[in-house]
Each structure stands twice: as structure tokens, then as C-alpha cells.
Length: 334
Image 1: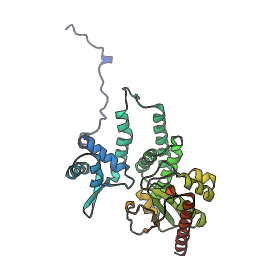
Image 2 (image 1 turned 90 degrees about the horizontal axis):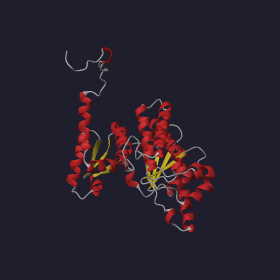
Image 3 (image 1 turned 90 degrees about the vertical axis):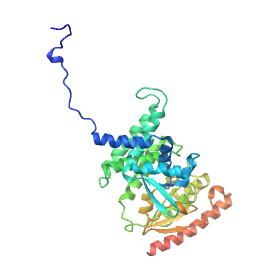
């Protein structure tokens, strides 16, 4: 006998079955984390994710740091090799966007993991305000509810799209207490865009300007008023503002009434919205819209109500209304 204590049989270790991540999967994750373990690469990924166009070119990303374009291209190549990015050459420039299969992972990384990492303090919830935890829970519940409703789409896609919609609106929205209803409206429309068979049913028109705070909001409201349900119009912005401009808000109140006008808010442009539209009308931002075969494009050169006098605002409204009536006549005759 030794002096060492002997454990009773009942207290001996009984290991549970190991359920850790597999070796190959772990190796793949480590490879991706190594590729992302560079501050400039993470900033590039964030810039591409938040770009209203859904993509960025090397010339855009070179503005992030005092480095040469070849250096930027090298970092983008590393990210592309991990499968995070895909690229497309157009003329002399190469454009990069988040790979569709990686949207969920990138969203979690940048909108959940990154804020939790840089938050001050220690502990499980240190540095994370109760309001932030509550909002995250509400977004998660909304995503699950919409995933249950849109059964024709993959559940993971619906959840990722809802979280992306919230993140996109949260970057500029001022009325944070209304974020969940706004996110639901925006996400529902994006999900409907995903399953719409373009060219069937009621024609859809998408108006796009830079901030979605003036011209495009006004044009969409006029179409919906004058078309009487024969055409559905929506609007979006390449770089959405925080709120609709007061000059335009008063016009929307006249056209749509208090309920609709008060709920209008600037929305970011998405590829899905363009693909679902029968007609896309750009108003000062023609280069930002993706070109989708079968979609009809028009560019309207009209004044910006945000920069106009009261008389100028009224003239802009009349100009847009005349163009809208002409557009309705062409769509109604198709």
C-alpha cells in the first residue's frame, strides 16, 4: 500500500463522449482566422460589407490606409483564398463582394463578435449594455419568426438576411426605439424580393438616389398614388441618410397621409431589390446599380429638394410628377 489516497470506485472519472469540432473543420477555421488576423484585412472586409453597392473596388479600399494598391490587392487575394470574397473584373478594375455562402459568418464576425471583443471590461457580459443584449435577442426572435414564415427559403439565409437588414439600418437610423419594426419591414421586403418572379404580377418600379431622403421617396409616393395599385413603387439609396428630408416629408404627408408619411425611412439599396424590379429609375446615382438582364433602366436628371427653396421644391415635384405619369403610361400599356 502507498500513502496516496485511493478514490472510492463511485468517484472515479467517467469521461463523457467527446463532441468537439472535427480536426478537418478546426483546421479550416484556423486557416480562415489566420487570414483574418490582420487589422487592414478586417477593415477591408467591413468596408465591403457596409458598402451600399454590395461591393468595393481596389481604388475604394486603398483609402483605408496609406498603402499602395498592390498591397491592397495582396490582402484582398488572401481574403479571397479563404472563400470570404469573390471578385469580378470590369475594365481595368476588380470589384470584390462577400461570397453569398459567407454572408452569415461575416455578419456574425463584424456585427456580433467584433463589438463584443472591443467592449471594455471583463466577464461574460461586461461592457455589453442591457439594451444591446435585449436588442440582439429581439433581432434573433424576429429572424426565427420570419424563417418559420418564409419556408421556401433556406432558414440560414433568412436568419442572415434579417441580421444584415438590422445592421444596415442601424448604421444610420436615429430612432433606435423603432429598429425592430423597421427591420421587419425591410427584411420582409428583401425576402419577398428573393422569391418574386420578375415579369409576373403587378409591375414593380425601384427609384434610387443617393440618400433616399428626397427625390426617390417622392417619386415612389407619386407612382403609388397615381397608379392606383396597377404599379408598385419602392425606393432606396446608395448611401442612405438618417431620415427623410423635412421638405420631402411635408410633401409625402400631402400625398400619402399621416400614417404612411410618418413611417417612411431611408433604406439601403440591395441587389435583391434590383433583381425583383421591372424598372429601375436612377436619380443622380446611376453607376451604383447592378446591371441585371431583363431589367429596364432609366436615369432621371431632376433637382434635389434638400437643396431647393420652397418654390424650387414645388417645381421639382411637378417635374417628377410629369415623368411619373409618362412612366405609368408606358407600363400600363405593356
